[in-house]
Length: 314
Image (tube, rainbow, N blue to C red; front, side, top):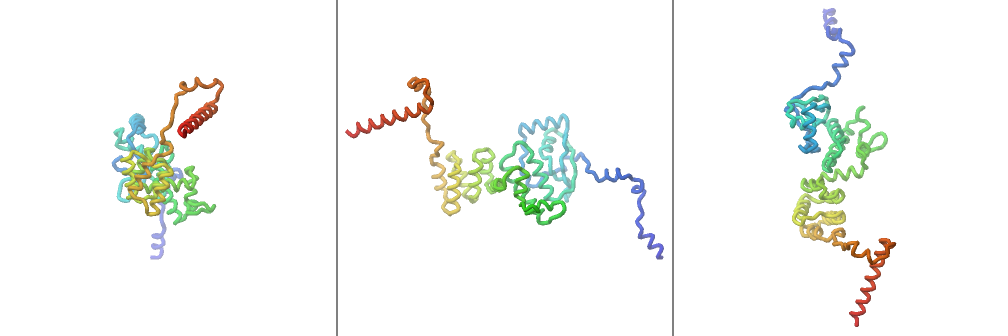
């Protein structure tokens, strides 16, 4: 009985293991490119980058139709079946437009935070990125980095809330994307804007700096601001946005106050006096500079004004 138990406890090497080479065993561990049906690939949850069927996308679709997808996408298995796209949303859209049924993808085992970081990094390499895309992407990656900091391991010990060199996650993120710590935080502030205001930022109807100030308003105040901007066809300057923010923080912002501020005349909106050069150049010596011409015009106007004042006093 003892000898039988001893034999049973010994794990025998299978024939396949016995004759497999080191190269074949290594090959089995390598990631492989698989053609996966597009119908089985879902988008990354809360994917912050917009995938539009614009001119660039149509050009990509033509390329995919002619040559196929040259760079595989990156997906991970979903717990309930199917795959989740991590990197390659635009390639997937181009494949759909090109009439393809499958797309070459690498399947990789990734946790939520690692997948989020890869998803953001792969999209930030694009040439043209909207302010809203940066805002939500920075927020998602920073939150993932902070969560990784809560469970340090050999893989992420340098991406903690504060790493061994004394740097915080937001500083590390800033270095990775080429932005200052403050600029990262200012972009993330934009995620507090209502969708309608954020769209105006993307369309460059509201400048970045005023938009950051407006992000501190309540949702109701932002809606009132948006309605006033639409009805009056105007947008706030930085100085006006700062005043609106201060009034909101003091509890003194109302629809009427928003209207009065937005309908103020801005310095750059004041009507300018333009005189055609040919109308006045003939009165000046040819060697006169623009500054000399301006000074002389002002002197003559001052003389005319004083003369007129004297005549009125008589």
